[in-house]
Length: 294
Image (cartoon, rainbow, N blue to C red; front, top):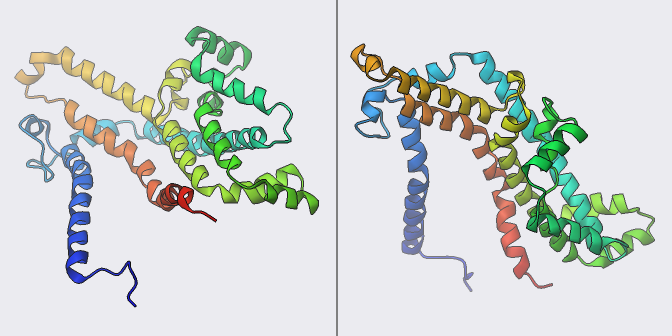
């Protein structure tokens, strides 16, 4: 008897065509942005195409006018993203494990504190005072890591995932002499890889794309993350273009403001977009695991 998941040749061709069309729809915007970043500013104003009508590297030359600053911003962002993601996932997972265990005495109170932060906040002034005066995070690399370590949404998601794991696993491990930390690291974390992978991706994207903490807490240019550095470059270029105005056009000078937007997109999106293929299988597993009945 043939297996149910074996399709005929016409069906497989149709599926391949549909997937190819969907891949084209997904990749076309990236191709347009890449082509626009290598297109002269005068041609961008006439329209954007995948293949540049007039090839130009002016946008990248302007962006990398100070390569040391770009490299330094990349280093800061990579450090913040890697260290912040690892610590944030670990902090949220540990707290979620604690409040998901029936033998945790204050698990309801801890869960309420996490849920309360979703409804109310102390405001920006109180937050700034805590960050600067109490924690002393101004102009330090940890200023872009510590504020995002705990996330109430991720905490509640992980708690629900941990609660779905049978408590018999933990009881059997305790009978064998395992402590809570060993149970958490060797039993619950491996069984929660789909949820951990999803939260890891969202956390990494948050750290990678963040520029607000840099504006609020960082004055040293050597500690500026990539997003903030590129934002400042864009602001200066737009100010220069508006200030030069008609004088620039009379002199034949074109400031690549539109092309610079495309170039900054290419520079920032590259590393983080490659993270998704490694975590995609865990997303699929996370969607299907709830439908498995054992």
